[in-house]
Length: 613
Ligand code: G6P
Figure (spheres, rainbow, N blue to C red):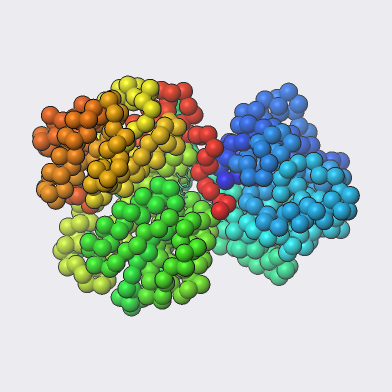
Protein backbone atom coordinates (compact mmCIF):
# COMPACT_ATOMS: atom_id res chain seq x y z
CA UNK A 1 0.00 0.00 0.00
CA UNK A 2 1.77 3.07 -1.37
CA UNK A 3 5.17 2.39 -2.91
CA UNK A 4 8.20 4.46 -2.02
CA UNK A 5 11.57 4.83 -3.71
CA UNK A 6 14.62 6.87 -2.70
CA UNK A 7 17.86 7.13 -4.65
CA UNK A 8 21.27 8.73 -4.26
CA UNK A 9 24.06 7.95 -6.71
CA UNK A 10 25.42 8.84 -10.08
CA UNK A 11 22.60 7.84 -12.40
CA UNK A 12 19.70 10.06 -13.42
CA UNK A 13 17.50 10.00 -10.30
CA UNK A 14 14.27 10.44 -12.24
CA UNK A 15 15.01 7.37 -14.37
CA UNK A 16 15.95 5.20 -11.40
CA UNK A 17 12.99 6.38 -9.33
CA UNK A 18 10.40 5.97 -12.09
CA UNK A 19 11.73 2.50 -12.86
CA UNK A 20 11.44 1.62 -9.18
CA UNK A 21 7.90 2.98 -9.09
CA UNK A 22 6.97 0.80 -12.06
CA UNK A 23 7.97 -2.26 -10.04
CA UNK A 24 6.14 -0.99 -6.96
CA UNK A 25 2.99 0.08 -8.72
CA UNK A 26 1.15 -3.02 -7.49
CA UNK A 27 1.17 -1.31 -4.06
CA UNK A 28 -1.17 1.45 -5.22
CA UNK A 29 -2.02 3.26 -8.41
CA UNK A 30 -4.16 6.25 -7.44
CA UNK A 31 -1.40 8.73 -8.26
CA UNK A 32 2.36 8.92 -8.67
CA UNK A 33 5.02 11.54 -8.15
CA UNK A 34 8.73 12.20 -8.09
CA UNK A 35 11.06 14.83 -6.64
CA UNK A 36 14.64 15.32 -7.78
CA UNK A 37 17.18 17.40 -5.85
CA UNK A 38 19.78 19.62 -7.40
CA UNK A 39 22.11 22.06 -5.66
CA UNK A 40 19.67 24.86 -6.42
CA UNK A 41 16.23 23.48 -5.78
CA UNK A 42 13.77 20.62 -5.96
CA UNK A 43 12.01 19.62 -9.15
CA UNK A 44 8.70 17.93 -8.49
CA UNK A 45 6.16 16.29 -10.80
CA UNK A 46 3.06 14.50 -9.59
CA UNK A 47 -0.08 13.30 -11.26
CA UNK A 48 -3.32 11.55 -10.36
CA UNK A 49 -3.93 8.11 -11.88
CA UNK A 50 -1.54 5.38 -12.85
CA UNK A 51 2.18 5.80 -13.28
CA UNK A 52 1.68 6.18 -17.05
CA UNK A 53 0.10 9.60 -16.37
CA UNK A 54 3.19 10.73 -14.49
CA UNK A 55 5.43 9.43 -17.27
CA UNK A 56 3.39 11.42 -19.80
CA UNK A 57 3.79 14.53 -17.66
CA UNK A 58 7.52 13.93 -17.38
CA UNK A 59 7.73 13.64 -21.16
CA UNK A 60 5.93 16.98 -21.53
CA UNK A 61 7.76 18.69 -18.68
CA UNK A 62 11.14 16.96 -18.24
CA UNK A 63 12.73 17.17 -14.86
CA UNK A 64 16.21 18.50 -14.11
CA UNK A 65 19.07 16.08 -14.31
CA UNK A 66 19.77 15.45 -10.60
CA UNK A 67 21.15 12.25 -9.14
CA UNK A 68 19.23 12.30 -5.86
CA UNK A 69 15.49 11.79 -5.71
CA UNK A 70 12.39 10.21 -4.21
CA UNK A 71 9.20 8.83 -5.70
CA UNK A 72 5.80 7.56 -4.67
CA UNK A 73 2.90 5.57 -6.01
CA UNK A 74 -0.23 6.11 -3.95
CA UNK A 75 -3.11 4.11 -2.53
CA UNK A 76 -5.32 6.89 -1.20
CA UNK A 77 -6.21 7.08 2.49
CA UNK A 78 -6.51 10.78 3.40
CA UNK A 79 -8.02 12.73 0.55
CA UNK A 80 -9.20 11.66 -2.89
CA UNK A 81 -6.77 10.57 -5.60
CA UNK A 82 -6.19 14.01 -7.15
CA UNK A 83 -3.11 15.87 -8.36
CA UNK A 84 -3.01 18.01 -5.22
CA UNK A 85 -3.04 14.97 -2.93
CA UNK A 86 -0.36 13.14 -4.93
CA UNK A 87 3.01 12.80 -3.20
CA UNK A 88 5.69 14.15 -2.82
CA UNK A 89 4.42 16.88 -0.48
CA UNK A 90 6.41 20.02 0.14
CA UNK A 91 6.93 22.40 3.04
CA UNK A 92 6.22 26.13 2.72
CA UNK A 93 9.69 26.87 1.37
CA UNK A 94 9.34 24.23 -1.36
CA UNK A 95 12.77 22.93 -0.31
CA UNK A 96 11.66 19.75 1.46
CA UNK A 97 9.86 16.91 -0.33
CA UNK A 98 8.33 13.99 1.57
CA UNK A 99 6.72 10.74 0.49
CA UNK A 100 4.78 8.58 2.90
CA UNK A 101 3.16 5.18 3.29
CA UNK A 102 0.82 4.52 6.22
CA UNK A 103 -1.49 6.62 8.34
CA UNK A 104 -0.40 9.30 10.81
CA UNK A 105 -3.09 8.88 13.41
CA UNK A 106 -2.51 12.17 15.26
CA UNK A 107 -2.42 14.17 12.05
CA UNK A 108 -5.60 16.16 12.86
CA UNK A 109 -4.09 17.72 15.99
CA UNK A 110 -0.77 18.34 14.21
CA UNK A 111 -2.66 19.95 11.34
CA UNK A 112 -4.55 22.23 13.74
CA UNK A 113 -1.27 23.24 15.31
CA UNK A 114 0.14 24.18 11.91
CA UNK A 115 -3.02 26.11 11.04
CA UNK A 116 -2.69 28.09 14.26
CA UNK A 117 0.89 28.89 13.22
CA UNK A 118 -0.49 30.22 9.93
CA UNK A 119 1.00 27.48 7.77
CA UNK A 120 -0.99 27.22 4.52
CA UNK A 121 -1.99 23.58 3.87
CA UNK A 122 -2.59 22.76 0.26
CA UNK A 123 -3.68 19.12 0.35
CA UNK A 124 -6.05 16.86 2.31
CA UNK A 125 -3.28 14.44 3.24
CA UNK A 126 -1.71 13.55 6.55
CA UNK A 127 1.64 13.52 4.76
CA UNK A 128 1.79 17.25 4.10
CA UNK A 129 1.80 17.83 7.86
CA UNK A 130 5.14 15.99 8.05
CA UNK A 131 6.68 18.17 5.34
CA UNK A 132 5.80 21.32 7.30
CA UNK A 133 6.96 19.89 10.62
CA UNK A 134 10.29 18.93 9.04
CA UNK A 135 10.57 22.45 7.65
CA UNK A 136 9.96 23.94 11.10
CA UNK A 137 12.65 21.93 12.89
CA UNK A 138 15.24 21.63 10.09
CA UNK A 139 18.53 23.11 11.21
CA UNK A 140 20.92 21.95 8.52
CA UNK A 141 20.57 18.19 9.21
CA UNK A 142 17.60 16.38 7.66
CA UNK A 143 18.16 13.14 9.60
CA UNK A 144 18.02 15.09 12.85
CA UNK A 145 14.85 16.81 11.75
CA UNK A 146 13.33 13.46 10.81
CA UNK A 147 14.14 11.99 14.23
CA UNK A 148 12.53 14.95 15.98
CA UNK A 149 9.39 14.78 13.87
CA UNK A 150 9.04 11.00 14.11
CA UNK A 151 9.02 11.24 17.89
CA UNK A 152 5.86 13.32 17.57
CA UNK A 153 4.04 11.02 15.16
CA UNK A 154 1.58 8.29 16.04
CA UNK A 155 0.38 5.47 13.82
CA UNK A 156 2.07 3.67 10.97
CA UNK A 157 4.44 5.38 8.64
CA UNK A 158 7.30 5.01 6.28
CA UNK A 159 8.66 8.44 5.39
CA UNK A 160 11.32 9.32 2.88
CA UNK A 161 12.46 12.91 2.45
CA UNK A 162 14.96 15.10 0.65
CA UNK A 163 15.99 18.72 1.31
CA UNK A 164 17.45 21.07 -1.28
CA UNK A 165 19.88 22.36 1.38
CA UNK A 166 21.35 18.87 1.85
CA UNK A 167 21.41 17.71 -1.76
CA UNK A 168 23.59 14.62 -1.22
CA UNK A 169 21.27 12.92 1.22
CA UNK A 170 18.02 10.95 1.29
CA UNK A 171 16.51 10.24 4.70
CA UNK A 172 13.98 7.52 5.54
CA UNK A 173 12.13 6.49 8.69
CA UNK A 174 9.84 3.64 9.55
CA UNK A 175 7.35 2.64 12.18
CA UNK A 176 5.09 -0.33 11.42
CA UNK A 177 5.24 0.24 7.65
CA UNK A 178 8.00 -1.28 5.49
CA UNK A 179 11.27 0.23 4.29
CA UNK A 180 14.38 -1.57 3.03
CA UNK A 181 17.77 -0.24 1.99
CA UNK A 182 19.49 -1.32 -1.23
CA UNK A 183 23.29 -1.21 -1.14
CA UNK A 184 25.02 -0.39 -4.42
CA UNK A 185 28.48 0.66 -5.59
CA UNK A 186 28.64 4.44 -5.34
CA UNK A 187 24.86 4.53 -5.01
CA UNK A 188 22.28 3.53 -2.44
CA UNK A 189 18.53 3.04 -2.49
CA UNK A 190 15.47 3.02 -0.30
CA UNK A 191 12.34 1.11 -1.21
CA UNK A 192 9.07 -0.16 0.21
CA UNK A 193 10.38 -3.53 -0.85
CA UNK A 194 13.38 -4.85 -2.72
CA UNK A 195 11.67 -4.73 -6.10
CA UNK A 196 12.21 -0.94 -5.99
CA UNK A 197 15.93 -1.46 -6.60
CA UNK A 198 16.25 -5.06 -7.79
CA UNK A 199 17.39 -3.89 -11.24
CA UNK A 200 20.47 -2.32 -9.58
CA UNK A 201 21.39 -4.42 -6.56
CA UNK A 202 20.37 -7.60 -4.74
CA UNK A 203 22.22 -6.61 -1.59
CA UNK A 204 19.70 -5.28 0.93
CA UNK A 205 19.36 -4.21 4.55
CA UNK A 206 16.24 -4.79 6.58
CA UNK A 207 15.45 -1.88 8.90
CA UNK A 208 14.04 -2.37 12.36
CA UNK A 209 11.08 -0.72 14.02
CA UNK A 210 11.38 3.00 14.85
CA UNK A 211 14.58 3.57 12.91
CA UNK A 212 15.82 6.47 10.81
CA UNK A 213 18.18 5.83 7.92
CA UNK A 214 20.29 8.32 6.02
CA UNK A 215 21.71 7.27 2.67
CA UNK A 216 24.50 9.01 0.81
CA UNK A 217 26.33 7.93 -2.31
CA UNK A 218 29.05 6.30 -0.19
CA UNK A 219 27.34 5.22 2.98
CA UNK A 220 24.32 4.33 5.04
CA UNK A 221 23.74 5.41 8.62
CA UNK A 222 20.98 3.96 10.78
CA UNK A 223 19.81 5.28 14.14
CA UNK A 224 16.83 4.92 16.41
CA UNK A 225 14.28 7.73 16.62
CA UNK A 226 16.28 8.91 19.65
CA UNK A 227 19.52 9.10 17.68
CA UNK A 228 21.25 6.05 19.13
CA UNK A 229 23.32 4.17 16.53
CA UNK A 230 21.50 1.11 15.20
CA UNK A 231 22.02 -1.52 12.55
CA UNK A 232 19.85 -3.52 10.18
CA UNK A 233 20.05 -7.14 9.02
CA UNK A 234 21.82 -7.50 5.69
CA UNK A 235 20.52 -10.07 3.22
CA UNK A 236 20.84 -11.08 -0.41
CA UNK A 237 17.69 -11.14 -2.53
CA UNK A 238 17.43 -14.61 -4.08
CA UNK A 239 15.72 -13.51 -7.32
CA UNK A 240 16.64 -11.01 -9.98
CA UNK A 241 14.85 -8.37 -12.01
CA UNK A 242 13.83 -10.82 -14.74
CA UNK A 243 11.67 -12.69 -12.19
CA UNK A 244 9.52 -9.58 -11.89
CA UNK A 245 9.01 -9.10 -15.66
CA UNK A 246 5.99 -10.33 -17.61
CA UNK A 247 8.19 -12.68 -19.64
CA UNK A 248 5.97 -12.81 -22.72
CA UNK A 249 2.66 -13.14 -20.87
CA UNK A 250 -0.05 -10.50 -21.29
CA UNK A 251 -0.47 -10.16 -17.54
CA UNK A 252 1.65 -10.80 -14.48
CA UNK A 253 -1.23 -12.81 -13.08
CA UNK A 254 -1.21 -15.31 -15.95
CA UNK A 255 2.56 -15.58 -15.71
CA UNK A 256 2.30 -16.21 -11.98
CA UNK A 257 -0.41 -18.84 -12.49
CA UNK A 258 1.95 -20.68 -14.84
CA UNK A 259 4.84 -20.36 -12.38
CA UNK A 260 2.94 -22.37 -9.77
CA UNK A 261 4.50 -25.78 -10.40
CA UNK A 262 7.96 -24.27 -9.89
CA UNK A 263 6.84 -22.20 -6.89
CA UNK A 264 5.47 -25.31 -5.20
CA UNK A 265 8.60 -27.31 -6.02
CA UNK A 266 10.86 -24.53 -4.72
CA UNK A 267 8.90 -24.36 -1.48
CA UNK A 268 9.49 -28.07 -0.92
CA UNK A 269 13.14 -27.95 -1.93
CA UNK A 270 15.75 -28.85 0.66
CA UNK A 271 13.24 -29.45 3.41
CA UNK A 272 13.08 -33.21 3.26
CA UNK A 273 16.00 -35.56 3.92
CA UNK A 274 16.63 -38.91 2.26
CA UNK A 275 14.46 -40.64 4.84
CA UNK A 276 11.51 -38.36 4.12
CA UNK A 277 11.96 -36.50 7.41
CA UNK A 278 11.27 -32.80 7.46
CA UNK A 279 13.79 -30.15 8.43
CA UNK A 280 12.49 -26.62 8.75
CA UNK A 281 15.70 -24.75 9.49
CA UNK A 282 14.07 -21.39 10.09
CA UNK A 283 11.77 -22.95 12.70
CA UNK A 284 13.64 -21.46 15.69
CA UNK A 285 11.21 -23.20 18.07
CA UNK A 286 12.76 -25.96 20.14
CA UNK A 287 11.30 -29.46 20.07
CA UNK A 288 10.30 -28.85 23.68
CA UNK A 289 8.39 -25.69 22.70
CA UNK A 290 6.61 -27.66 20.01
CA UNK A 291 5.69 -30.48 22.36
CA UNK A 292 4.30 -27.87 24.75
CA UNK A 293 1.76 -26.48 22.30
CA UNK A 294 -1.85 -27.13 23.27
CA UNK A 295 -3.65 -24.99 20.69
CA UNK A 296 -2.95 -23.43 17.31
CA UNK A 297 -4.45 -20.15 16.11
CA UNK A 298 -4.02 -19.10 12.50
CA UNK A 299 -4.35 -15.41 11.59
CA UNK A 300 -4.24 -13.97 8.08
CA UNK A 301 -6.10 -11.79 5.57
CA UNK A 302 -7.49 -12.27 2.08
CA UNK A 303 -6.22 -15.29 0.19
CA UNK A 304 -3.79 -16.04 3.00
CA UNK A 305 -6.81 -16.44 5.31
CA UNK A 306 -8.15 -19.08 2.94
CA UNK A 307 -4.79 -20.87 3.15
CA UNK A 308 -5.27 -20.63 6.93
CA UNK A 309 -8.64 -22.38 6.69
CA UNK A 310 -6.91 -25.22 4.86
CA UNK A 311 -4.26 -25.29 7.60
CA UNK A 312 -6.97 -26.17 10.12
CA UNK A 313 -7.86 -29.37 8.26
CA UNK A 314 -4.20 -30.39 7.88
CA UNK A 315 -2.97 -29.55 11.40
CA UNK A 316 -5.96 -31.03 13.19
CA UNK A 317 -5.80 -34.17 11.07
CA UNK A 318 -2.12 -34.83 11.55
CA UNK A 319 -1.45 -33.48 15.03
CA UNK A 320 -4.86 -33.66 16.77
CA UNK A 321 -4.18 -30.16 18.10
CA UNK A 322 -7.24 -27.88 18.09
CA UNK A 323 -6.90 -25.11 15.51
CA UNK A 324 -8.76 -21.80 15.33
CA UNK A 325 -8.56 -19.68 12.20
CA UNK A 326 -9.35 -16.01 12.29
CA UNK A 327 -9.29 -13.02 9.99
CA UNK A 328 -6.42 -10.98 11.43
CA UNK A 329 -8.38 -7.73 11.62
CA UNK A 330 -10.90 -9.32 14.01
CA UNK A 331 -8.43 -11.24 16.13
CA UNK A 332 -7.02 -8.86 18.71
CA UNK A 333 -10.24 -6.93 19.23
CA UNK A 334 -12.12 -9.88 20.70
CA UNK A 335 -9.61 -10.50 23.48
CA UNK A 336 -8.67 -14.01 22.29
CA UNK A 337 -7.62 -16.63 24.80
CA UNK A 338 -3.88 -16.99 24.34
CA UNK A 339 -1.28 -18.62 26.53
CA UNK A 340 2.36 -19.59 26.29
CA UNK A 341 1.19 -22.95 24.98
CA UNK A 342 -0.64 -21.34 22.05
CA UNK A 343 1.13 -21.39 18.71
CA UNK A 344 -0.04 -18.53 16.54
CA UNK A 345 0.62 -19.03 12.83
CA UNK A 346 0.59 -15.84 10.78
CA UNK A 347 0.30 -16.34 7.03
CA UNK A 348 1.25 -13.42 4.81
CA UNK A 349 2.71 -13.21 1.32
CA UNK A 350 4.09 -9.71 1.82
CA UNK A 351 4.98 -9.98 5.49
CA UNK A 352 3.67 -6.43 5.84
CA UNK A 353 -0.12 -6.69 6.15
CA UNK A 354 -0.88 -4.38 9.04
CA UNK A 355 -3.80 -6.37 10.45
CA UNK A 356 -1.68 -9.52 10.56
CA UNK A 357 1.26 -7.66 12.07
CA UNK A 358 -0.93 -6.20 14.83
CA UNK A 359 -2.41 -9.65 15.48
CA UNK A 360 1.02 -11.21 16.05
CA UNK A 361 2.12 -8.36 18.29
CA UNK A 362 -0.96 -8.94 20.39
CA UNK A 363 -0.23 -12.67 20.51
CA UNK A 364 3.38 -12.12 21.58
CA UNK A 365 2.28 -9.64 24.24
CA UNK A 366 0.17 -12.46 25.68
CA UNK A 367 3.22 -14.75 25.73
CA UNK A 368 2.25 -16.93 22.75
CA UNK A 369 4.80 -18.14 20.21
CA UNK A 370 4.38 -16.90 16.67
CA UNK A 371 5.33 -18.77 13.54
CA UNK A 372 5.20 -16.79 10.29
CA UNK A 373 4.58 -18.27 6.87
CA UNK A 374 5.86 -15.59 4.55
CA UNK A 375 7.09 -15.01 1.01
CA UNK A 376 9.16 -11.85 1.39
CA UNK A 377 12.55 -11.96 3.04
CA UNK A 378 13.34 -8.79 4.96
CA UNK A 379 9.71 -8.04 5.80
CA UNK A 380 8.30 -7.14 9.18
CA UNK A 381 6.12 -10.12 10.12
CA UNK A 382 8.91 -12.75 9.99
CA UNK A 383 11.24 -10.36 11.78
CA UNK A 384 8.79 -10.02 14.65
CA UNK A 385 7.97 -13.73 14.84
CA UNK A 386 9.61 -16.50 16.85
CA UNK A 387 9.97 -18.66 13.77
CA UNK A 388 9.44 -18.44 10.05
CA UNK A 389 8.78 -20.84 7.23
CA UNK A 390 9.42 -19.03 3.98
CA UNK A 391 7.48 -19.81 0.85
CA UNK A 392 9.56 -19.64 -2.32
CA UNK A 393 7.03 -18.28 -4.77
CA UNK A 394 9.41 -15.55 -5.94
CA UNK A 395 8.10 -12.04 -6.50
CA UNK A 396 4.33 -11.91 -6.92
CA UNK A 397 3.42 -8.73 -8.78
CA UNK A 398 -0.26 -9.13 -9.72
CA UNK A 399 -2.46 -7.78 -6.95
CA UNK A 400 -4.55 -10.96 -6.78
CA UNK A 401 -2.58 -13.74 -5.13
CA UNK A 402 -2.04 -16.98 -7.06
CA UNK A 403 1.36 -18.65 -6.71
CA UNK A 404 1.83 -17.25 -3.21
CA UNK A 405 -1.50 -18.81 -2.20
CA UNK A 406 -0.52 -22.23 -3.49
CA UNK A 407 2.84 -22.08 -1.74
CA UNK A 408 1.12 -21.01 1.49
CA UNK A 409 -0.95 -24.19 1.30
CA UNK A 410 2.24 -26.20 0.80
CA UNK A 411 3.85 -24.45 3.75
CA UNK A 412 0.92 -25.16 6.07
CA UNK A 413 1.15 -28.82 5.14
CA UNK A 414 4.87 -28.78 5.88
CA UNK A 415 4.24 -27.14 9.24
CA UNK A 416 1.45 -29.59 10.07
CA UNK A 417 3.65 -32.56 9.23
CA UNK A 418 6.59 -31.08 11.10
CA UNK A 419 4.46 -30.62 14.22
CA UNK A 420 3.29 -34.21 13.83
CA UNK A 421 6.89 -35.40 13.43
CA UNK A 422 8.13 -33.64 16.57
CA UNK A 423 5.07 -34.44 18.67
CA UNK A 424 5.10 -38.06 17.51
CA UNK A 425 1.51 -38.11 16.32
CA UNK A 426 2.56 -39.68 13.02
CA UNK A 427 5.13 -42.36 12.33
CA UNK A 428 8.16 -41.46 10.23
CA UNK A 429 6.94 -43.59 7.32
CA UNK A 430 3.55 -41.84 7.33
CA UNK A 431 5.25 -38.46 7.21
CA UNK A 432 7.51 -39.65 4.41
CA UNK A 433 4.43 -40.79 2.49
CA UNK A 434 2.65 -37.44 2.85
CA UNK A 435 5.79 -35.55 1.91
CA UNK A 436 6.12 -37.69 -1.22
CA UNK A 437 2.48 -36.87 -2.07
CA UNK A 438 3.35 -33.19 -1.79
CA UNK A 439 6.31 -33.77 -4.07
CA UNK A 440 3.89 -35.01 -6.75
CA UNK A 441 1.94 -31.75 -6.72
CA UNK A 442 4.08 -29.70 -9.16
CA UNK A 443 3.42 -32.31 -11.88
CA UNK A 444 -0.29 -32.34 -11.00
CA UNK A 445 -0.50 -28.54 -11.26
CA UNK A 446 1.32 -28.74 -14.59
CA UNK A 447 -1.31 -31.18 -15.77
CA UNK A 448 -4.10 -28.77 -14.75
CA UNK A 449 -2.40 -25.97 -16.64
CA UNK A 450 -2.11 -28.10 -19.77
CA UNK A 451 -5.84 -28.76 -19.79
CA UNK A 452 -7.07 -25.37 -18.68
CA UNK A 453 -7.94 -24.01 -22.14
CA UNK A 454 -11.72 -24.64 -21.80
CA UNK A 455 -11.72 -22.20 -18.84
CA UNK A 456 -11.03 -19.40 -21.32
CA UNK A 457 -14.11 -20.29 -23.40
CA UNK A 458 -16.12 -20.68 -20.22
CA UNK A 459 -14.99 -17.24 -19.02
CA UNK A 460 -16.10 -15.58 -22.24
CA UNK A 461 -19.52 -17.22 -21.89
CA UNK A 462 -19.93 -15.77 -18.37
CA UNK A 463 -19.33 -12.11 -19.19
CA UNK A 464 -23.00 -11.17 -18.73
CA UNK A 465 -23.55 -13.21 -15.54
CA UNK A 466 -24.70 -10.99 -12.68
CA UNK A 467 -23.44 -13.24 -9.91
CA UNK A 468 -21.60 -16.51 -9.44
CA UNK A 469 -21.82 -18.92 -6.51
CA UNK A 470 -19.10 -21.31 -5.42
CA UNK A 471 -19.80 -24.43 -3.36
CA UNK A 472 -17.38 -26.80 -1.66
CA UNK A 473 -17.12 -29.18 1.24
CA UNK A 474 -14.23 -29.94 3.61
CA UNK A 475 -11.08 -28.36 2.08
CA UNK A 476 -13.17 -27.57 -0.99
CA UNK A 477 -14.93 -24.91 1.07
CA UNK A 478 -11.86 -22.63 1.35
CA UNK A 479 -11.34 -23.27 -2.36
CA UNK A 480 -14.88 -22.02 -2.97
CA UNK A 481 -14.13 -18.91 -0.91
CA UNK A 482 -10.91 -18.32 -2.86
CA UNK A 483 -12.66 -18.79 -6.22
CA UNK A 484 -15.29 -16.24 -5.22
CA UNK A 485 -12.70 -13.78 -3.90
CA UNK A 486 -10.74 -13.96 -7.17
CA UNK A 487 -13.87 -13.17 -9.17
CA UNK A 488 -14.78 -10.22 -6.92
CA UNK A 489 -11.26 -8.82 -7.00
CA UNK A 490 -10.73 -9.09 -10.73
CA UNK A 491 -14.06 -9.25 -12.57
CA UNK A 492 -15.96 -7.00 -10.11
CA UNK A 493 -18.77 -9.57 -9.99
CA UNK A 494 -20.90 -10.49 -7.04
CA UNK A 495 -19.50 -13.86 -6.06
CA UNK A 496 -19.94 -15.88 -2.86
CA UNK A 497 -18.44 -19.10 -1.62
CA UNK A 498 -20.48 -21.40 0.62
CA UNK A 499 -20.05 -24.76 2.29
CA UNK A 500 -22.30 -26.90 0.09
CA UNK A 501 -24.09 -28.22 3.18
CA UNK A 502 -25.32 -24.70 3.93
CA UNK A 503 -27.04 -24.51 0.57
CA UNK A 504 -30.45 -25.33 1.95
CA UNK A 505 -30.09 -22.80 4.77
CA UNK A 506 -30.24 -19.77 2.50
CA UNK A 507 -28.04 -19.68 -0.59
CA UNK A 508 -30.40 -21.93 -2.53
CA UNK A 509 -32.87 -19.03 -2.59
CA UNK A 510 -30.41 -17.18 -4.85
CA UNK A 511 -30.56 -19.84 -7.54
CA UNK A 512 -32.42 -18.78 -10.63
CA UNK A 513 -32.39 -19.76 -14.25
CA UNK A 514 -28.89 -19.66 -15.70
CA UNK A 515 -27.06 -18.58 -12.50
CA UNK A 516 -23.54 -20.01 -12.76
CA UNK A 517 -22.64 -22.17 -9.77
CA UNK A 518 -19.13 -23.56 -9.48
CA UNK A 519 -18.96 -26.75 -7.43
CA UNK A 520 -15.74 -28.28 -6.15
CA UNK A 521 -16.29 -32.01 -5.79
CA UNK A 522 -14.21 -33.79 -3.13
CA UNK A 523 -12.18 -36.81 -4.25
CA UNK A 524 -14.27 -39.97 -4.26
CA UNK A 525 -11.57 -42.04 -2.62
CA UNK A 526 -11.09 -39.71 0.36
CA UNK A 527 -14.48 -39.33 1.99
CA UNK A 528 -17.07 -41.06 -0.23
CA UNK A 529 -19.85 -39.68 1.94
CA UNK A 530 -18.80 -36.06 1.27
CA UNK A 531 -18.47 -36.79 -2.42
CA UNK A 532 -21.93 -38.32 -2.65
CA UNK A 533 -23.54 -35.50 -0.72
CA UNK A 534 -22.13 -32.87 -3.02
CA UNK A 535 -23.30 -34.80 -6.06
CA UNK A 536 -26.81 -34.55 -4.55
CA UNK A 537 -26.27 -30.81 -4.05
CA UNK A 538 -25.37 -30.42 -7.72
CA UNK A 539 -28.61 -32.11 -8.69
CA UNK A 540 -30.58 -29.86 -6.34
CA UNK A 541 -29.25 -26.65 -7.84
CA UNK A 542 -29.53 -27.94 -11.37
CA UNK A 543 -33.18 -28.79 -10.78
CA UNK A 544 -33.68 -25.11 -9.94
CA UNK A 545 -32.12 -23.86 -13.14
CA UNK A 546 -28.49 -23.25 -12.11
CA UNK A 547 -25.79 -23.54 -14.72
CA UNK A 548 -23.41 -26.01 -13.10
CA UNK A 549 -19.67 -25.73 -13.51
CA UNK A 550 -18.25 -28.79 -11.82
CA UNK A 551 -14.63 -29.30 -10.82
CA UNK A 552 -14.01 -32.99 -10.23
CA UNK A 553 -11.15 -35.43 -10.33
CA UNK A 554 -10.41 -37.08 -13.64
CA UNK A 555 -11.72 -40.54 -12.87
CA UNK A 556 -15.01 -39.34 -11.39
CA UNK A 557 -17.78 -40.21 -13.87
CA UNK A 558 -20.59 -39.85 -11.37
CA UNK A 559 -20.85 -36.07 -11.83
CA UNK A 560 -20.85 -35.94 -15.63
CA UNK A 561 -24.64 -36.13 -16.10
CA UNK A 562 -25.20 -33.08 -13.87
CA UNK A 563 -22.42 -30.81 -15.11
CA UNK A 564 -23.08 -28.17 -17.75
CA UNK A 565 -19.33 -27.68 -17.78
CA UNK A 566 -17.02 -30.32 -16.35
CA UNK A 567 -13.50 -29.31 -15.37
CA UNK A 568 -11.13 -32.18 -14.66
CA UNK A 569 -8.32 -32.11 -12.10
CA UNK A 570 -5.78 -34.89 -11.35
CA UNK A 571 -6.37 -37.39 -8.60
CA UNK A 572 -4.58 -36.25 -5.42
CA UNK A 573 -5.20 -36.94 -1.71
CA UNK A 574 -8.20 -35.05 -0.32
CA UNK A 575 -6.15 -32.68 1.86
CA UNK A 576 -4.08 -31.65 -1.15
CA UNK A 577 -6.99 -31.11 -3.51
CA UNK A 578 -6.97 -27.29 -3.06
CA UNK A 579 -3.56 -27.27 -4.73
CA UNK A 580 -5.09 -28.46 -7.99
CA UNK A 581 -8.73 -27.32 -7.70
CA UNK A 582 -7.85 -23.65 -7.17
CA UNK A 583 -5.93 -23.34 -10.42
CA UNK A 584 -8.88 -23.43 -12.87
CA UNK A 585 -10.65 -20.85 -10.70
CA UNK A 586 -7.66 -18.51 -10.95
CA UNK A 587 -7.69 -18.86 -14.73
CA UNK A 588 -11.45 -18.29 -14.81
CA UNK A 589 -11.19 -15.02 -12.87
CA UNK A 590 -8.22 -13.80 -14.89
CA UNK A 591 -9.89 -14.55 -18.25
CA UNK A 592 -13.25 -13.17 -17.19
CA UNK A 593 -11.68 -9.90 -16.05
CA UNK A 594 -9.79 -9.69 -19.33
CA UNK A 595 -12.93 -10.46 -21.34
CA UNK A 596 -14.72 -7.65 -19.49
CA UNK A 597 -11.92 -5.27 -20.35
CA UNK A 598 -10.62 -4.81 -16.79
CA UNK A 599 -7.04 -4.37 -15.64
CA UNK A 600 -6.15 -7.87 -14.47
CA UNK A 601 -2.97 -6.98 -12.61
CA UNK A 602 -4.18 -3.78 -10.98
CA UNK A 603 -7.86 -4.14 -10.12
CA UNK A 604 -9.66 -1.01 -9.00
CA UNK A 605 -9.45 0.12 -5.37
CA UNK A 606 -7.13 -2.72 -4.35
CA UNK A 607 -3.49 -2.83 -3.39
CA UNK A 608 -1.30 -5.85 -2.94
CA UNK A 609 0.30 -5.00 0.33
CA UNK A 610 -2.21 -3.56 2.77
CA UNK A 611 -0.13 -1.64 5.28
CA UNK A 612 -2.93 0.27 6.97
CA UNK A 613 -5.54 -1.14 9.35
C1 G6P B 1 -4.43 -8.02 -0.23
C2 G6P B 1 -4.12 -8.74 -1.52
C3 G6P B 1 -4.50 -10.22 -1.39
C4 G6P B 1 -3.79 -10.84 -0.19
C5 G6P B 1 -4.08 -10.05 1.09
C6 G6P B 1 -3.20 -10.50 2.24
O1 G6P B 1 -5.79 -7.94 -0.03
O2 G6P B 1 -4.81 -8.16 -2.61
O3 G6P B 1 -4.12 -10.90 -2.57
O4 G6P B 1 -4.21 -12.15 -0.04
O5 G6P B 1 -3.80 -8.66 0.89
O6 G6P B 1 -1.87 -10.17 1.93
P1 G6P B 1 -0.61 -10.87 2.56
O7 G6P B 1 0.55 -10.15 1.96
O8 G6P B 1 -0.71 -10.67 4.04
O9 G6P B 1 -0.67 -12.30 2.18
